[in-house]
Amino acid sequence: MEFDYLVIGAGSAGCVVANRLASNDRFSICLIEAGGKDNLPWIHIPVGYFKTMGNPRTDWCYKTQPDTGLNGRSINWPRGKTLGGSSSINGLLYVRGQPEDFEHWRQLGNEGWAWNDVLPYFKKTENWEGASDETRGKGGPIQVSKNRVEKDIVKAWLEAAVNKGYKWTDDYNQESQEGVGFFQMTMANGLRCSAAKAYLSPLKGNKNIEIFTNVQTTKILIEKKVAIGVEVIMGGERKKIRARKEVILCAGAIGSPQLLMLSGLGDQKELSKHGIEPLVHLPGVGKNLQDHLQARPVYKCNASTINVETQSLYKKIGMGVEYFFKRSGPMAMAASLGTGFLRTDNALDTPDIQYHIQPFSADRVEDGPHKFSAFTASVCQLRPESRGHLEIISSNPEDYPKIYPNYLSTKKDCDIMVKAIQITREICQVEPVASLITEEFAPGTSVNLNDYDKTLNWIRDTATTIYHPVGTCKMGKDKSSVVDEKLKVRGVDRLRVVDASIMPTITSGNTNAPTLMIGEKASDLIIKESY
Ligand SMILES: Cc1cc2nc3c(=O)[nH]c(=O)nc-3n(C[C@H](O)[C@H](O)[C@H](O)COP(=O)(O)OP(=O)(O)OC[C@H]3O[C@@H](n4cnc5c(N)ncnc54)[C@H](O)[C@@H]3O)c2cc1C
Image (cartoon, rainbow, N blue to C red):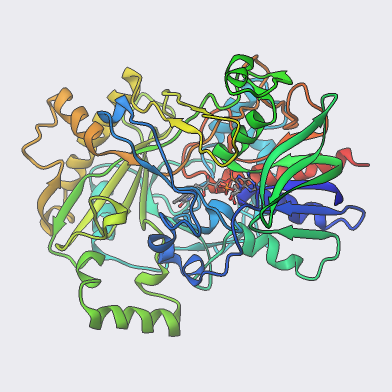
């Protein structure tokens, strides 16, 4: 089997790259996905993330190592394993990040990644439901819709934040992100708009692309420091697929560094430990791991929330009927409805925390909602300083790497999270939300938020990922960078990484939109070089 381009991983970035390359009939493309087809109905129903997360048919079901920053807890790290990758199981929330994030990437030496460079690619990906202007895109493959589910408790929280003095925003995806408002979502007519739906569905019938599912790539084949193809497991057999032009790794923030290491690209000493012949010493592979950590204050309330609405079979049937006929109601709900990008200190130039306001609550998503009416005011720090890493444990591609997130390992990260919890309680004491709240369930008023250690300890005991690992194949110029600004792997020809792992620093918000942008920008770079 031989193709011009091999795209490894059909996730958010991989689908974009496969589509843009396949749109050019000079090329032959092979897209290789370890997961199956996206034909499970729950993938397409927005609220289906409750059914796809933790489901081995759609989720790799990774778990972190016990983390000191979380008082020794190990937590679940879901990653999509199906066509569309994590965009098929994510919370549908559409957030680009702050222009300053990309200015920072540029300042780190990454030519071509400043805000004005990446804005055209953000626009190219989307078909925004709102008014068109110079920052928002029309006619792109990803449908970005406005919120279509109203919940009084969420509205009341947003109004309380405004009454407390925070700004309102109708569109946080403009140049200024700051403010509270409703989330935008990757949804078309009440159905999830995953990267597969947007970028692979239109390719049906294209003769120049082959899409393999349930085929795991086990190694990149490298000869004389040139990537010439990949080894895969297909129908239980090991096979080789050759690339005439390039191998493009889009296996995500865990899969991409793992594959590089299995192929001899990583820290020399680490690889030798597992009997892997080091081909290029790239000490940064698997390092620089960043994620958003969410703390989850929960408030019992006397307004209707999903917790109680899903307890009655009668109401559940009503929800199903509403969704079936109108594509609206709780089943059309993204993972959160309200958001807020706020500054914990007025001296800051841009927001440093983000809220996810959810009209439901649970101890853990896997456990299902609480039996009482309540909402969650989840809050995360936008640009943590803490850095984790991944380690492979053997040369066997079936063995999951060990994940060390290293959350809350700097004083600044702890300070910001403690402050965020204080701000949350303050907002909840303001009308109109105050009179709807019957009790602060978590952390609970027994936790004195002026007691820094106790508050931090509650965060360490209960916080969890908001599913945004990035940075493990960092783009940059320094010795720890893995790819250059054209996303080419250092020291190897005809090999690129194109996915969330190339982010040098995490963006200020949910990471799907910037990963789609990375896919668009990389496609342009690849196509331009092919002439
Ligand atoms: C549960 C969850 C909720 C989230 N919620 C949101 C949200 O609401 N909004 C938002 O913006 N972001 C959200 N995110 C994050 C966002 O979806 C990801 O950042 C983004 O999808 C990452 O894209 P990617 O292309 O880097 O990787 P992925 O989309 O994860 O794609 C990687 C693909 O490669 C495949 N693969 C891996 N290894 C191999 C191999 N060896 N061989 C072949 N194929 C392989 C995987 O199966 C997968 O399909 C969420 C993520 C999760 C998991």
